[in-house]
View 1 (cartoon, rainbow, N blue to C red):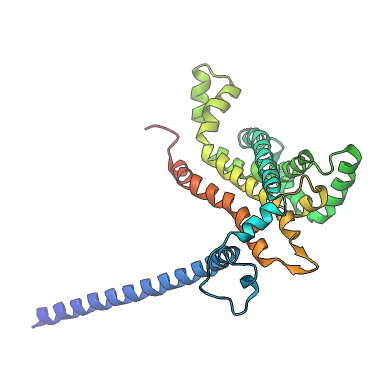
View 2 (view 1 turned 60 degrees about the horizontal axis):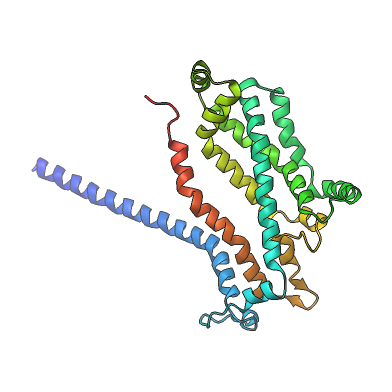
Length: 290
C-alpha cells in the first residue's frame, strides 16, 4: 500500500511539474511573440504603406486589403535622384568603414599588446564622443567651407572616419586581448617579422571582430543625419537627409517616405543575413589546434 501511494504521489508530482513547465513555456513564448511583434510591426507597417496608393496611405481607418503598387518607389526614383543619394550613402559608408578598419586595427593591436598610451588614452577615445554633435558640426562646416570640402563626399568621409575610429578601436581592443601571444611568438620563430605576423596570423584570427566593428561603423555612417545635413548639398546628399526632404509645406508624403525608408533598410537587412552565419561560426572557432 505504501509503495502504491508513493508511486501515485510521484506520478502526480510528475504531471504537475509537466503542467507547470508547459504553462511557463507558454507564457514565455507569448511574451517573446508580443515583444517581437512590437518591434516588427512598425517595420511591416512601413513596408505596407510603401506599397499602397498615395491616396490610400492617408485614409483613416487604413484599409487592410488593397492592390499593391510601386508608385511610391517610382516617385522617389523618377521625381528625385534617389539613385544618386543611395550611391552617395553607399560610397561614404563603405569608404569610411574601410578607413576606420585600416587605421583602427593596428591602433587596437598596439594597445592590446603594448598598452600604448595606457588607460588614459583608452578612456579619452570615448571621452571625445561625449560632446554633443551639434557643437562640432559648426567648426566642421567653417573649416570645410574654407578649404573647399563642403558639399563633397570626401569631406563627409573624413568627418565619419574621425568619429567612428574611437568606437572601432574600442571594439577591436577586446578581440585582440583574447588572442594568445603564442600565435605571434610561433610565427616569429618560423621567420615572420612582427608586422608580417600581425597581417598573416592575427588579422585572419580576428576576422569576426573586424567584421563586427566594420558593421557597427557602417551602420553609424549609413544612418547619420546631422553632419550629412550640414556638410552636404544637392550632389553629395545621403539618404537620411533626402528622406527629410519629403516633408514639405504641403504635408508629409507618407507613401514616398515609407518607400524611401524601405530603400534605406534593404542594405541593412542584406548585410545582416549575409554575414550572420559567418559571424556566429567565427566567434566560436578556435585559434589554436590541440
